Length: 258
Image 1: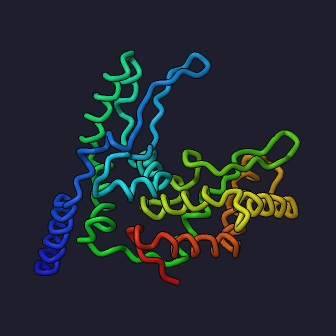
Image 2 (image 1 turned 45 degrees about the vertical axis):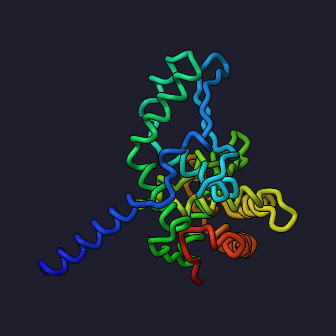
């Protein structure tokens, strides 16, 4: 037992150490591809963060420029917003920018995710994860959300990075699987080849064929569960994910299996 625990500890330490020994230094160049600015809408201030194309030629520039939505998902969902209110109190754009990047470089979660991504894709000094298609579908369907039911009994659906049920259903987050799923769905949301929008509408129409409840809250919960299953069995979604994986597999930190 002691030997087993020791082996696990050593493996963990080696993994953490390897993430910290990237040949490609992306952490100190977040400014090259992340844009931050203060904006006001309806008299309320917001911070707008997004991934932009980097013109600086570096070890990560091609990867970033070809995977902007993927990285944007990681930035949105796996970085801390703990200092957002302090930044919103500032008026000078340069000061906001400088303070934001100082905080981001101290963000242990985001830095860990980005270090792992670099190790498995750019530096290639850590083995890629293995993800079965069932696990990928389990994540992908969570982006198809039934947001509410109108007074007329109509379902209101939405596909959105910030409004999904992953946080409510997954005890262990999978940043790269989530980011790949979302980026792929967005790429083909209204594409001629797959059109996830059309598939989503078809699934919503299927919900009307079954009475899912009288109480609106209970009906909404059942409708969301039913939506997950309908999209889980959607062959077009499955085909789209397979196709996108084959196109991007060299730049993804995991291997997809059947």
